[in-house]
Amino acid sequence: MAREVYADELFIEFSRKFVFMRVLADRDPEGAELQKRYRVEGIPTLLILDSEGREIDRIVGARPVEGLIEELELILEYGSESSPLRL
Image (cartoon, rainbow, N blue to C red; front, side, top):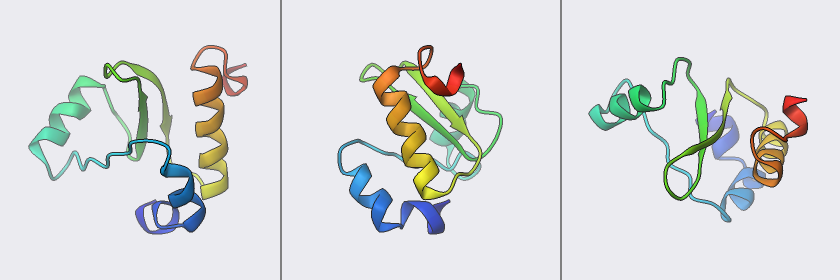
């Protein structure tokens, strides 16, 4: 996803509105701690957190850029439980 999605101009423009942080759990001790804290079992996993670090939702697995943006927009608009993706 790093080369195909995160470097895509569409995603770069979308991401300007948010704070994104890439953590490599297998290469960074802090990453391993975050993986444990949020119970990340598969890679890639995108965690959507509120300003207090509480998990709103997560996306597990790779997505094409358009699909990822659409999914993130729905999560951010509706939250986890009421998202149309969960119905």
